[in-house]
Length: 236
Image 1 (spheres, rainbow, N blue to C red):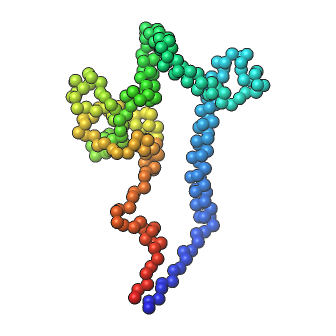
Image 2: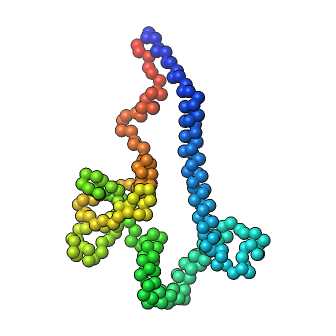
Image 3: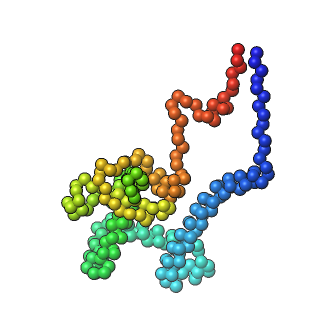
């Protein structure tokens, strides 16, 4: 009967290295939580600073309750926006909004700004808007170099008539801010569609390629970690 090999314990790393590894592990846990809380705190404070000064001084929280209430401006903004959305679905409210849009549409300087912002809002926050279809790969900025892009739903009619009907408008975002980038019109045959969701593609762009899904093991093959933990059978 063969003798089992003696497993030697790996030597412990030095204390400085263990402290460094513990600090990096804690940083991975604490930093996202801290940044999320900080951004939420900053956003609520930003909305409060813009909304609370618009409240009449008689109804100011500091005069009514004796102190400033953090988040009161955000609550008021959400309530007002919800009320406007409810009125927009009503016949009378829809007519009032159409009257206001007509006035804005006849103002020379305000008209292009309002129409552009309205189209962006409809694209981002409504199901009927022309949002991005799916992520894809395009060769940009040169052949052989691939970049992640977002396919749009339609191409402007004049561009399709002049450059070709098989063009697809794609938006190539920049890292780490995907809200900025370049608009390109590419032949459909030069686009490689991706199966990943828009959210996963956005995470990949923001993290500069660091956030990726784990590669699944090949079918019929045990992972290395599982294989190393499996008990060894004694030889006969």
